[in-house]
Length: 442
Picture: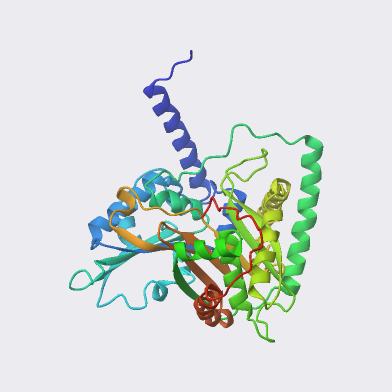
């Protein structure tokens, strides 16, 4: 039996850190995968926010950063002067943390939400920020003393990482499974040709069809999970199908005027996928992306059950080839950008390919351990991508939050979701014999 020594492991780790340091010294984003590069170039941002029974100060918020970096060492990557895997010196901690005193929590967390473009303004600072608003005079009637928010480049964190960090578990990204299937030379060459054609096609279409920048809005909504679970069971649908239906039906409208589409709503949704199928996988992102078309109906029961049928069929599909192809497209775009910074261009980042809304279901968030000590539900987790309407669903133990980043014209319709829910709950449904599929991710 082969033996291992702590000295050998430490030596190997030191070699890896030395190689990583040499790479970032040559280029700050050298350690980024192709998908990470794309998310960085698009200036995509993610956030996590929650109320806490703890009153944060500079020292305690610095401890939060230290614990985050220990659990997610990729947070030390991507900026000028980065030292991969190493703790941040005090001047960096001071620059990326902020404490403010407030008289009330009215309007939080929504009043904090935005594009988070300040994360990218200084190239010599880490690509994330941690801030806290502390209630002046002590905790409120609910025992909440502060509200904490973490904002980061999407190139560093995704929903699965947020779920792991709330449990005080490691969110470090490896390079995928060691049991990947290798792609043959012919298949790899064909994949590269496809990627080149797709990349140039997308660039051309983006410059022709991408919308101009529009007013944008952010909003959150928290609903008791038990309430939605009961309704999903009554309807005979998956819980996530109910989530998707509530959001898209309310945003689109049930009258003659439709805000997204009169016939079919183009949607993309992401789910956690730990499988790594080939050696061409990106190595960073843990999600799989599915594209769906939800046929519009003013009958909500018909609408949600049709969505459930669509979801059931889609999730049986093997999308590994599509994900590998998209990875090759990202690699192609990165190569083009290295040759000329004008490619693929800002309009490319706003090109949504006919997708009216992206629906992201992140893994369940369960607070546990020192990372989230004192935090209370609801927990909020969302994202921003230029030109893309997004609703992120974040399930906790007691609540699920819906986190909206959308065109201003859609944000006002978020207020229709709760009245819609109340109306559907009051309805009587005839038995359908539909078998409810429980949601592992919910």
